[in-house]
Amino acid sequence: MKHFYRTKDIDRIFGIGRETLRHYEKLGMLSPHINPENGYREYGYWDIGTLVDILRYRSIGLSLKDTKKAIYDMDFPEVLDTLNSQRDHHEKELRKYELLLRKTKHDCEVLEFAKKNLGKLFERELNGMVMVPYLFEEGSKYLPSLHQVLRNSEFFDTGWCFHSKLKMDMPKGLFRYTEDEEEEELMDDTIQGLGFFTAKEYMECLGIEAYVEIPKGRIIAKIVDLCGKEAIHENHFIEFEKEVEKKYKNLSDETYVILLSRFYDHEKRYHQYLLVYKQIL
Image 1 (cartoon, helix red, strand yellow):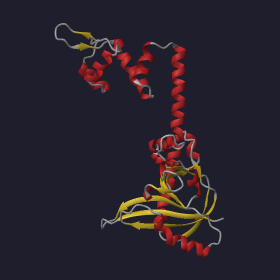
Image 2 (image 1 turned 120 degrees about the vertical axis):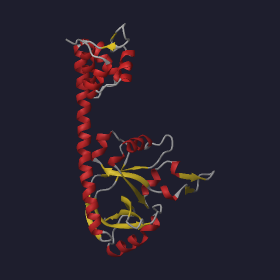
Image 3 (image 1 turned 180 degrees about the vertical axis):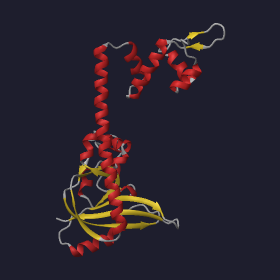
Image 4 (image 1 turned 30 degrees about the vertical axis):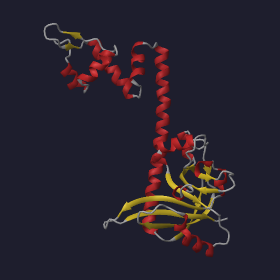
């Protein structure tokens, strides 16, 4: 009766290769017997049990360092505390994926709507939207939020807020100042008003604290197709602004633009589908 496993047996059964086994051995997690006749490593009962424990702890998200600690150094209460912490982590991840599924479904609905209503004016209610400005100056209160946005970009849409009074609160990272600081000029028009937009309900889950809330209310909007590889600029939306200002007397100063999709058509022409809107006051 076979009472040990060789490296090839471990690989065949567990899918753990030679280099990984050697690494576990160097960490002191495995203690195989080395056969003096042929130099082969032979893994016994306790090594196999340890491998099962390693796979289990790794599968629930523990690092290798914490896995070793759980197997060799923790008493029962500490093991329980570790599993409780992992439970909390998984609950948070589950909540995140529930929200991501909702976001993806919403994005699909928006693109279906865009396909059918390109170039048409329409009204909608807008609730609970926020923006994280693209501000990267050291010391900016938005910089930690920007880092979080870029690590969780699946929750955000690139967008712009033009003619906004909000820019008065923004730090100098977006501007070039004269020596007397009386005049300010945008360093780069392509980042004027640039930010990342999403629903406010996602921010708590992602741990993002600094952002700009977009006022709630009814909007007048249009989905436009900007053909060609052009950087988004406020001048692209002058015609939209003129059109809606003829129809509505009270509109917000701000014009918001959300990037819905970028793609090439069959003739290799580049398109940018953009949701453009103003708020009805």
